[in-house]
Length: 371
Image (cartoon, rainbow, N blue to C red; front, top):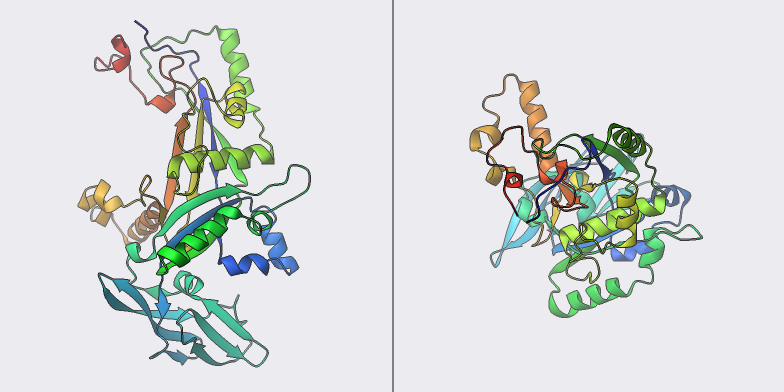
């Protein structure tokens, strides 16, 4: 009977994490990088998520402008009824500079955009952007975005962004066709992520009852190798795409959804990472800046209120308003963050901290019995 074994005392994992997303509508694909500012912002956006949710409208009646503050209502469809949700939108300087006078605002009759009129030009704000900028009592479930497809856009020879890829994307065309035909009440957005951040995590966790099998010399070489692992831009993008597809299991993705990254038959980018000495892949993605959680049936949005006791979530035991406000911000980030963790080896082949830590003399360790 085979038992777990521990090869090294210290093992490593690569942690990839994203910047906040740029949000586009399908129509934006054809105009968003027409100026140099947009082109620069999109230059490293090589991972994209196609997402959908029930449409949210702006009430074309009953809005007002007071200096730079707009008051109005969002309209949502809940349980076969329309819910009116008041919002407050303070027009930020990155949309209209502070030295520019605002003449008036208007809402499109179809409820999809807010128009801000100035002497120089008109500024059009779509619903999704208005939600991210506004204060409102929209429910999390009303703003949640369901991930239906994940892909990458990066050139092997010439530079390419996700926008370039999406302009001739058959899966996006199919998603839009299905929505128009079967679920016209849904809205589609595209989230562009950069994933330019990465770090190496080293840990001596795992089953500490097992003696490492490697010699001191092998341990030293292994430790030095872990500290010098460098990933190319293409590797980072491919690893992030593979991990996110496997984690979210989006409806319209076909490949990579059922791959076991710990199996011997690994895809090339995972095999290359494993051969570098790494035994884990951790990919973190966040959507807090757009005030919308992302998820799927396989990986639903996080909700600390269902995972933790009420006294912890409420912060009643914290002292001082500063600590409480910090905790509230942390909870907000947690609700909008997913962390996908994958071990690249099995416990029997090579026990690591990715399989959990078992402390010394733990009689309940599953590694102390035959498997």
